[in-house]
Image (cartoon, rainbow, N blue to C red):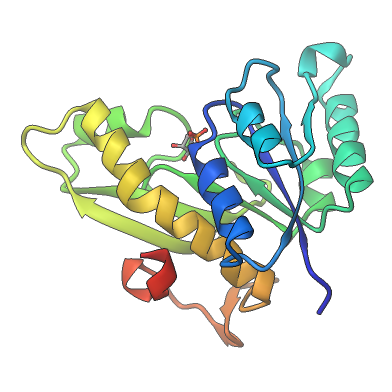
Length: 221
Ligand code: GRF
């Protein structure tokens, strides 16, 4: 198998990006970093990419007449770096059908909720409003349905009575996102994880339910 070339799309701080860069650098994710692309020039994550010696590009939607042209440019940049896998890591743009079709089965996203609960924005606030007993984060393959593609792995924790939006966001990030995303990408890069027409295959078998924190390999815990 040729070494996959991973691109990460960001819009903001890039804490997930950093975890991915670290896992590529120390060999836990067997992929080469193709590039990091942000839709915002101010994204702090761009600096993380530069520090790691990874090509960092900005493709700004305001520079294009419509979403299609913006996304064509995004694909052009990704292809120019030989990208074979795409990880959305806090990329705050809804992607259109042509882009999604181009990267079908090769693009994953991290979402801060226990999907299918709380698709979309403000997940931590909505968990509190709904009085949910549990919260967490999910990695899923990207399909046309927003935050609706097949879930690969999900980590969960109990909501405590004194939790607020901030504490939930912190636990979701530190205890779940930063662990499950590098692990999912490691499996994907190794060929252990595959999207199929009906869902997800893990190590050659159809995945009946998402993987969990208990499935993390020791180096990802
Ligand atoms: C994460 O919570 C991610 O799940 C969400 O946006 C946030 C990005 O944070 N989609 P960062 O840029 O990785 O620090």
